[in-house]
Amino acid sequence: MGRQKDKSYQSTVSRQYRQLMEQCKINLDKMEQELPPPRDDLKDTLKERGVSRRDFLKWASLTTSALMLPPMFKPLVARAAENFSRLPVVWLHFAECTGCSEALLRSTYPNVDDILLDTISLEYHETIMAAAGYQAEACLEKALHDFPGKFICVVEGAIPMGLDGHYLTLGPKGKTGLEVAKEVTSKAAVTICIGSCSCFGNVPAAKPNPTDCLGVGDALGIKTINIAGCPPNPVNFVGTLLHYLMFGALPPCDSLGRPVWAYGKRIHDYCERRPHYDAGEYVEEWGDDGAKKGWCLYKMGCKGPYTFANCAKVRFNAGVSWPVMAGHGCIGCTEPAFWDSMAPLEKPIAEKNVIGGEVTVDKAGAALLGVTLAGMAAHGVISAIKGHKPENHD
Image 1: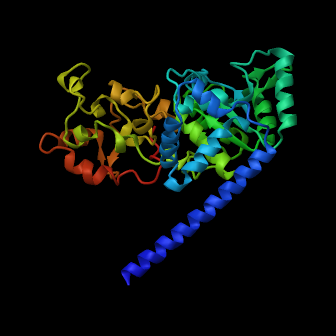
Image 2 (image 1 turned 90 degrees about the vertical axis):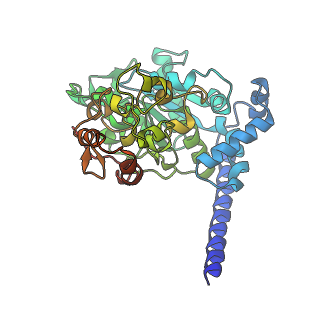
Image 3 (image 1 turned 180 degrees about the vertical axis):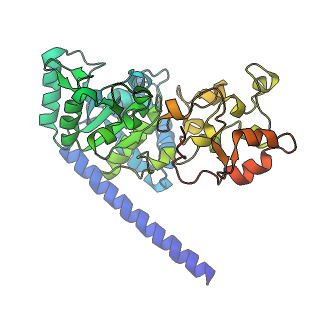
């Protein structure tokens, strides 16, 4: 009886995936018909950059897995990548430091994600475009006219709401950031917030927030997909665009609008220092023997237990490293209001519930005098933080 149920379940799942594949093929066909021709031939570009077909297929396989799709979708991921430069993108800058653009544009190794970002069809991007003044304004107007309902609006930075938005004015016509955001997002197919400032306000909205900055979704009252981070990982941005190309829809998101495939697990869950946390082995001060041995950075303020992101898996700088691996604790930059709520960044948050909402950092530290945190970590922390949204703490 059990085997029959298993077979029936597997048959149902297989049928659903086949249907999803057909929908994906139909959407890719539609995209190829409606969107402009590719700006670059990806095969030629990969060859010029020294990436073999084998490397590309390996990347497609890894990306398929990262997007939480079964292996049968690998050819469709590859096809979506080949159409990556078809997708028109209008990139807006508001209250931010341009660090997110820097992270996406400064590639040091020719991996596939970086190459795709190089081929992206940026119709408007104030940081890298040659145009200025009225000429730049004309580029934006042309993009809105040529691709209504088809372009992706990417927003970098929070939106100042104070003084009716006049803390930020842009362009030769003196439009406020709020006005520009309303106009462009209303004509976009989807709006993607890149970086935690545009997602949640974060640094520009940090206390006392004199300009009344808000994240884009809150400022405009619209649904956005949030690629959080300060800066975010380019892999998460590329994967989200590939998902849109494949399915014509945004990927499943958590309660904060972040793609589940990228932000569905805590930093703590995949951290290479997690075994030391379980064993109660901590760095007590910078440069001590524990630091040299790669012990857990929790007591040095690491916010990994409260932070949802895939940094430990995809890493940065072509997958070479990430902050915790390099020796500094996570600062929780993918979470709302992290600049305020995670402070002080290099000290534990004494009032923050860590284990099952019952034990604070201070109490957990005291418990280490008689028993390691291993048992509590293994059985408590894993199930402690419910959902994908940590408790509010000021």
